[in-house]
Image 1 (tube, rainbow, N blue to C red):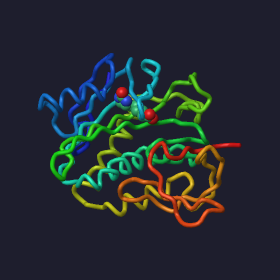
Image 2 (image 1 turned 90 degrees about the vertical axis):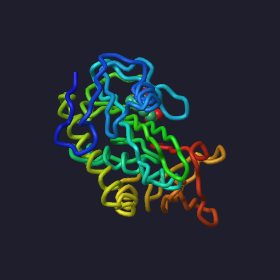
Image 3 (image 1 turned 60 degrees about the vertical axis):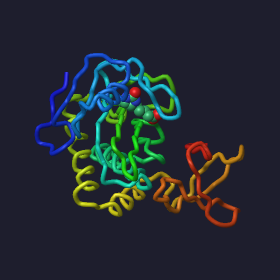
Image 4 (image 1 turned 135 degrees about the vertical axis):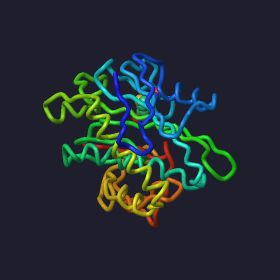
Length: 256
Ligand code: BTN
């Protein structure tokens, strides 16, 4: 069970709690389709049985252990060419949330969050475009809070990192507050460049040599920036010029 976040200005003031559902992104999409979605509405569940991840993957989450929710935004003010700013704003809010507890946090481009080389949060953003603007954006967030057993060795939770369990409503409120502030930065304060700069600061590999798999080869490279379109800019060791990559064109390598 979750309660709305009354102190926020937009996100989570209206909340739809479902004890169990297929995917909160799918429920949010239905609300948008039926014209029932007020901006900032959160759909949250304790038991997501058909969670979807990026690139057609599944998002698995043990019942009542983690945060699995979707936020409905209506960023009509944002040109389609700038839509990656939503990803950056959300990644930054989640990064700031974890940074409150640990300094081992990194954003893994485009918007995964890692604690000490293990994934602790994933985001699935689904935008609908109308003309030059974005008519709706469904921001689906999965945060591992109290779960301690995972299918892969590359996953972790906040409880695992801290050695203590946490209250899900309080954590939802903390993160919700940061998302609300981040969205206001975008919508009202128009701090697009501030968001881009802060995102880069938290980004794994920014101004730092890291390893990638590129064309079936392990290569070292330094992330030099992000294009406004969201493409990753990398200076690969031993190669001339700066390369730009889209999703799937490059793979991160964490440890040897
Ligand atoms: C990823 O890392 O691949 C993205 C995972 C996104 C998971 C969240 S959980 C809430 C929302 N509903 C979904 O079906 N997916 C997102």
